[in-house]
Image (cartoon, rainbow, N blue to C red; front, side, top):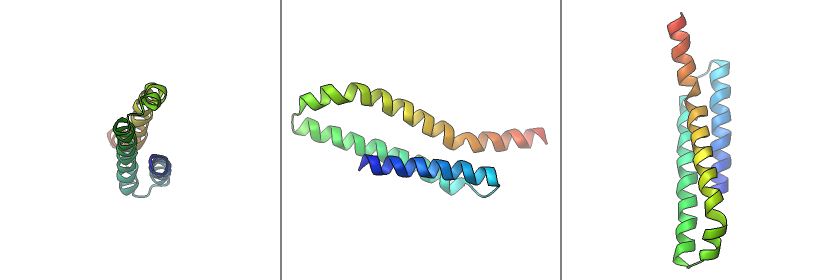
Amino acid sequence: MWIIFGFIAIAATIMNLYKYKTGKDYKLALAMGLSFTALTLCAEHSKVANWVDGEDWGALMDVMPAMEKALWVLTAVSILLNITPIFLERKNKIIR
């Protein structure tokens, strides 16, 4: 499930940036991108919780060290990409 949410978050982020570039209202796409990023993290957390409940320590030890770093980086990138239009819009207002 987290993969589906992740792909939707990526698509929404691309749509957000595209809508900003074309001058359309991008705020719904921004909210969708951030919301699906949060749902991706929740789904990943749920998967890890299932491994703990099933006492699958091998899966936890193999997957989680790398996944932790990847989730932090990808979440930070998602946040930065999704709020970029807001910063650019403010910068353009200051310049004018």
